[in-house]
Amino acid sequence: MIFEQLQLIPPILKALDKENYTSATPIQEQAIPPVLAGRDLFGCAQTGTGKTAAFLLPIIQLLSAQQGRPNGKRAIRSLILTPTRELAIQIADNAKAYGCFTKLRSGVIVGGVSQRAQEQLLEQGVDILIATPGRLIDLMSQGVVDLSHVQILVLDEADRMLDMGFIHDMKRIIAKLPAKRQTLFFSATMPSEITSLVNSLLRNPVKVEITPVSSTAERIQQQLYFVDKPNKQQLLIDLLQDSSIASALVFTRTKHGADRLVRGLTKAKITAQAIHGDKSQNARQAALNNFKSGATRILVATDIAARGIDIDELSHVVNYNLPNIPETYVHRIGRTGRAGLSGIAISFCEEEEIPYLKDIEKLTKQTIPVIADHPYPMTGTAAMEANRVVSAPPKNDVRNSSGGSGGRRRRRRPSAGK
Image (cartoon, rainbow, N blue to C red; front, side, top):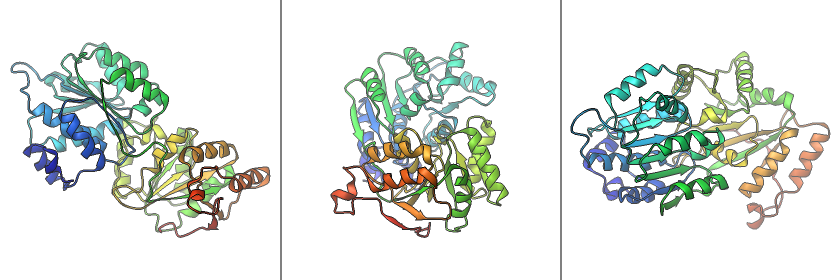
């Protein structure tokens, strides 16, 4: 479906044309009409599906159709809450791009930078405010934010906001908003806590579910390496000798682990930078820009910092550490294989991570193909446990139902670029 069919106003269509966007994604097709009609909406979609435009485009249209306050500074009429600084900045950039031919003004409030510039922004007034909960709460407590005119609330990446412990901040912020408002709620995963929150905040919402929480993109080729913990770094260095891996986003469990891995890769003459919560906002943005431009080949990130990394042509994702929350695996690998492109998701599994692997395969109803032929195979009792896992995939494995072998396929490692 082309955007003209969604009844968007000419200034928005002009902006989309400037960005070379012509066809709407499925979530945009399904979300934009009900939002324009004033309905509350619950969108469950993985990253890379186009959900940012799915809420920004109708918000810009709805606010453009109304007159702002005739006197005084602009009132905040739409509030977009998001968990991380990177994601907030990305949404703010998109809001400016999509609204560049309208008279709307948008701004971003995040932690990790000087508060003074943000106070000046609020003094001037904005129509659309994008914010992280922590910094917004700080400014609210100082009496410099007025949310009494908010007409449209967006909770983006709500599952991650819950994971990061923002639930109480979210409730404090929502308590300051008008009861009569439109609420748009987006989440990549749908645990029970999300369902409860949706039921408490949304009124008769339209539900748009593009990709089920347990699904992994069909175009993503998944690979699993059983490897002892001390050999993980060298295995990654070995894999990165393949020049077809032009760039890769590598996930670690901890901030210290990310920094340690970057030091090891740098020593091996592989350009790498880390992005996590201990880095300043300027350092995080610089690392992200270097990765996008190709100046840095490897970006090592923790899950929290990775929210907001938006790269359309990312060919490889590496789970250096398997996540202990299976939905996080789905979200991680969904960062490759976007926009109709193929992608490769490589996962390392050490002994203590085998239970995480079982949980992931139970959720996705898939067995991840094992690459057994590599220089650093798992040893000792851990290898016996890994072999047992390989021999006994979940009973509802999708490969079994389609006439597959019933177990994980053992094969030689293919070229990483295939």
